Length: 147
Image (spheres, rainbow, N blue to C red):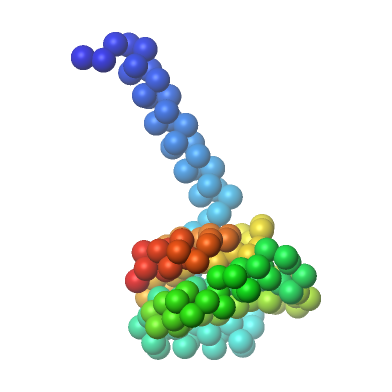
C-alpha cells in the first residue's frame, strides 16, 4: 500500500490536471457550427456542412499573421494534409485580415484569442477539438482523430 506522501502527491497531481481542464474549458468554450443569420457566407457553409454528412474544420486566419502563412505554406499546402482534409471534411476559412463586424462577432463567439486557430466539428456540428498550429504529421493525426 502506498504511503501517505505518495497518495497526497497523486491526489495533488489529479487536482492540477482537473484545474487545467476546467481553466481550458472556461477560456475555450465548446461551440457549435450553426447558422446564426449574421453572415450569409457563414450560413451557406453551415448548410453545405450539414448537407454533406461530413465533419467540418473551421480555420481562423489572417494574411498579416506569420504563423498563419507558415501553416498554409508548410502544412495545408502539402498534398497529404490537403488530401486528408478535403476527402473527410468540409473546410471553411474565416479571414481575419480586415474583419467585418460580422466576422469579428464570429471570432468573439468562438473564443478566438490566437491565430491560426482550427476548430474541428463532428457531423452534428458539435465542437470536438481545437488547435493553433500543428506540423504535417500531427495535423494528419488530428484530422484522423475527428473522422
